[in-house]
Image (tube, rainbow, N blue to C red):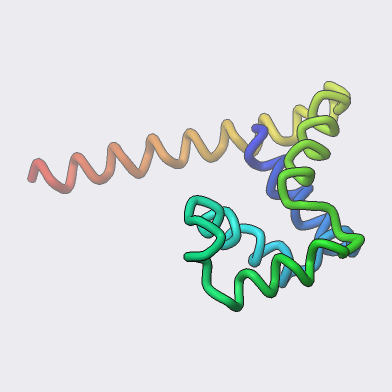
Length: 106
């Protein structure tokens, strides 16, 4: 259920202008760059990090914290919507797996 909520909230934060699409995607690639030393990082990624350091847009990690807090504060009625979505998806998955195994065993 949390996965569906997380995706909804990500879209909402981007749509509301708290995160722009470029920064959102760039942060995902910056995480991979952070495992390399600063000297090994590509010049363009270093420039992006420097350019974004003064940005009013919060870091991507903060997005997860914001969404987790919203999930904890979510009322039971609103949470039920996401639990229903997760239940339907689990059922769809089970049906697809059963169908797959029936087709393979033939």
